[in-house]
Length: 493
Image (cartoon, rainbow, N blue to C red; front, side, top):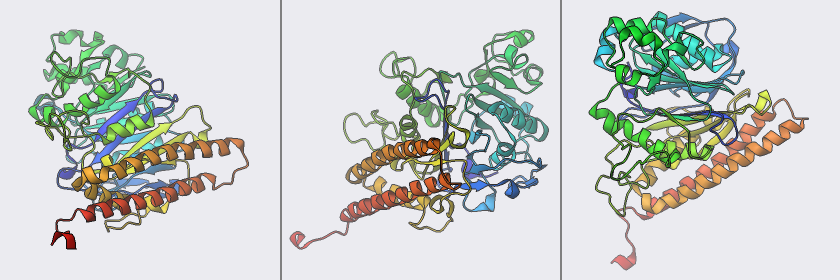
């Protein structure tokens, strides 16, 4: 399939009691593979625009879709030559999907249940699930049934979210899956690796309160001799904490350079007091195979926390690729989260304490996250602002995506000189984003608003963002221009 998408993306999921305001939060970077980039746009898909028969571009997978789709938002590729790739969105039932986190498995699993060349993949998943679900749990059930029937050509993790629950589904081989509910008081991090660590088979084949899986998963493990634990196979049906990561996941040198360091950094930031993360006798290191799947954070998680993590590049450690002082002997050793080839990140925030019409907000950033900023957008609107909708492969400063791509390339080459401008921009945008949402929330709840109120609000936010982002581009362009190698003045003669 699309090789450029292999081993990309980073995810964070936040339960409602772990967030600063009681909302559920879910964020994921969509990263292209090494040596590639992909322009993205934001759209609103109305029921009349949703296909009734779907056919993928890459695998030629086909499926008839229900005739009663919901309206939803999405972040598809600007160029549809390789399909839709909807990636992240929220429907009018205030349910969100984030897909996909490319994950890993092992030879035993893939030999027992090979991937299916004509199955579903990242290109398809949002389009065939989000318009038809009214809860996160229903999303797991719908995608699970499609996986069992049609199979998949790649290993993926998918997030489903409503105002009360966040679920994480991981595909296993070609036709199997496991899904686990994020504890309300915890967060989950995902770095391109099979992540769920323990699984409760009693719950999965009983109440399904926090665990759901393929109907034949135990038989699949037993019949194919996949169980590498010391739990007897005949006892699996009574196992409440089965180590699925050991049995179904991977533990490779590639993981320890590319995947586990990202999870380590996120845990270190959100739960610094839970474990010893650095130094001698550390409980966990960047290369630990047994990092927790979920933890209770040391403090409640904010939008700013999520943005910092999705933008991070091992700041404060010897692995920082921009490191200048102290021990920089291992700078650039590990794959950062805030990487050059990020296409976008969307944080979907579903606020159970708000009226349905303004319950869901999408915090959108595009390009390399180390140098960009979130722009909030209400999801239940008629259309997207031109600044994030009218995007093509043509480079221009008229849209959010390409302006941010240009800024990132300039600042990266002049980090020490230009990063101060980025820092001021990011701080201003973060504060103004919350100011906008607070202002429009208040106006909406006071009543007497027009039918286009939320569209108008989104456009006002987009107009402000365009002005500030263009101003940042002007500043970093000036700074970079001063540092050109062919600079020369009369005093240099």
